Each structure stands twice: as structure tokens, then as C-alpha cells.
Image (cartoon, rainbow, N blue to C red; front, side):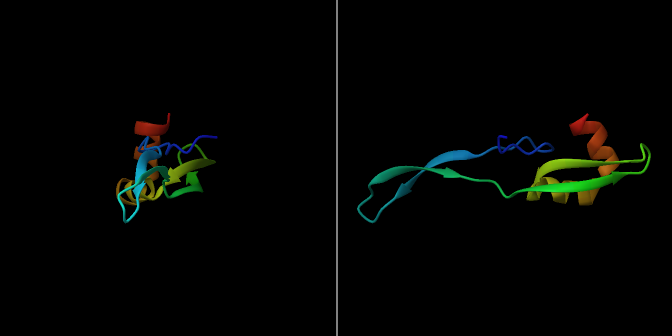
Length: 73
């Protein structure tokens, strides 16, 4: 499964490591991804989503019901 947040749609970035001599080697910037279970009271079911730390903060701010309607379904 790819590392894409289901709320923010963020994904890994590509970049370069730079040594002291300014040599460049390719690298990947990973997201802080986690699986998290949420309870939806209006549908009376539990959902499991793959979410980044930023997406988790959005859910804490706006609520799971609004985020679920707007981004996930």
C-alpha cells in the first residue's frame, strides 16, 4: 500500500542528501503515517484509515463526521 494520507492526500517527497563536499545523493522524505480507528456515531460503525499527523490534527479540529463526509467518502 502506498504512503498517501486519506485526508490530506499528502505523499512522500523526493529530494537529495548533501554531503560536506556538496555531493548529491537521492533520498526520500517519508510522512508520519499511522493507522487509526474512528467511531462514526451516525453510521454506528468503526472505520480504519491511514492518516498523517497533519490529518489527525484536522480531525481533532473539525471532527471526524465532517472530515469523513468531505474527504473520505
